[in-house]
Amino acid sequence: MPFFSILEYSDSENGELFMNTYAVFKADNYEDEVLFETVSKHFEAHDIKSKIPHGAKVLLKPNLVADKDAAFSVTTNPRFVFAIIKYLKQIGVEDITVADCPGGALLLFSEMVDVYEKTGYSFLSEFAMLNTDFESSDVASPNGSVNPKFNIINAISDADYIINVPKLKTHNMTCITAGVKNLFGSIPGLQKPAFHAKYPAIKDFSNMLVELAQTVKPDFTIVDAIDIMEGNGPTNGKKRHLGLTFSSCDVFGLDAFILELLGIHEDLVATVSASKQKGLINRHGEKIGDTDFKIDKPILLPASFSATSGLGKLTAKTKTLAEKAVAAVLMSYPQMNENCVLCKKCIVTCPKRALKIENKKIVLNKKLCIGCLCCDEVCPNGAVDIKKKIKTR
Ligand code: SF4
Ligand code: SF4
Image (cartoon, rainbow, N blue to C red):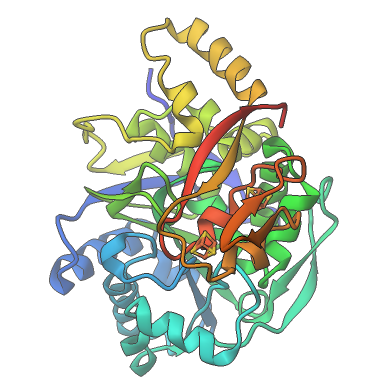
């Protein structure tokens, strides 16, 4: 039985009926010609041209979590974003802004310019506005059972049409980051670690992320999975060539579609589990494109998930039960290695003030640590090893 079937759903705001479509197209590399052709196929598959209002302020939300060169596969590749901008220009869109709020402390104008420089985005300023303003406003969460409102950077909340442009990566907390998790960058600076402190349990944190996605409500999501990150993502894993791109107007169903194609169990990815429990993954829609793709070897999951991913010899049912039991008692915690240069980014970012410098070393207070691994996410040097300890998270 196919995973998805064709069904229409109603857009609650304007009452129009749309078909949920989930697209996957192969793309071998980041050459401009290949990317433009691929991006065009995605936009045309969903007839995005007819959906962007005339004169709309269009916002592109890539993943710029850290100031790393595109070669590390930490950020959405700038050539991918360039292809999207070129396509938008071709269909007559003039007002295009690129915005994300990287991890760690609230950035100054000059620091964000530096992020654009180091990630290879600077050249895009010729074709679109690169946002450097992190002024934010409260936006009511329409389904806010966890959070009634979110403080979102104005560049995103003021846009008329939002295009979510994630990088597909592993993630030490949510296992995989794709469409839903990418929207966490809508929250300014150190408010992000504060959310980790507020929701230390993965389930609660993921419920918050899903409500945030319902609040930001991206109109279209197009995923850069040409080179992905596996292992200890989202910033310190290894680059792997996958050669795929994904898209949909339904960000929740798209994440589930990606996992299905890559053979990753949905229950391992907390954001997809949370979306499923809220009834947001309705399995309805049409799968199009290179859907016959078969992955040659499994995606290497982060060390924080290694205990669960090593249960491959068990039957599917036993494996699910075992995964849940293991996840319930094991918590990840950081241990700094010899790559540490004492830059203090992890100390500033830690939501529980669990890190300090003692005798020229970063020392962890394990009693305070909640295992959010924000320290690993902001570390520019791969100086955080992930260890396990027994504790219910
Ligand atoms: S662990 Fe990383 S972020 Fe923390 S001080 Fe060392 S180098 Fe900086
Ligand atoms: S030390 Fe790292 S994992 Fe522990 S609470 Fe702080 S940021 Fe999170």
